[in-house]
Length: 76
Image (cartoon, rainbow, N blue to C red; front, side):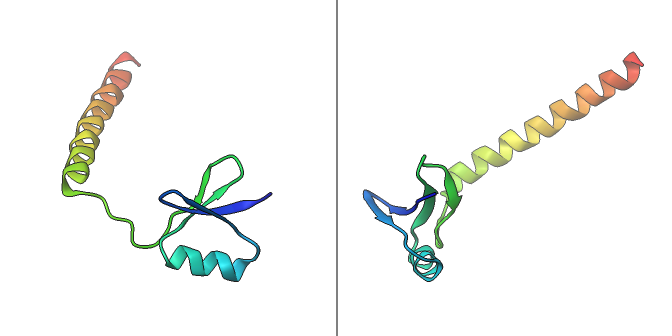
């Protein structure tokens, strides 16, 4: 299975593990031939806006999960 290092619009075929490690340290993502992410490159950041959106969604889902578990208990 061929692996590639991807960053921006660059795609580099990987020949060995040492090369893969070096490219990950430079911020390249490692993907397989189908484009599935195998290793995320170092130095990735998420904006605070994205983080707070995900955090709010997480809290809402936790509350919904707790309510559904409560309904299941009452149904039994």
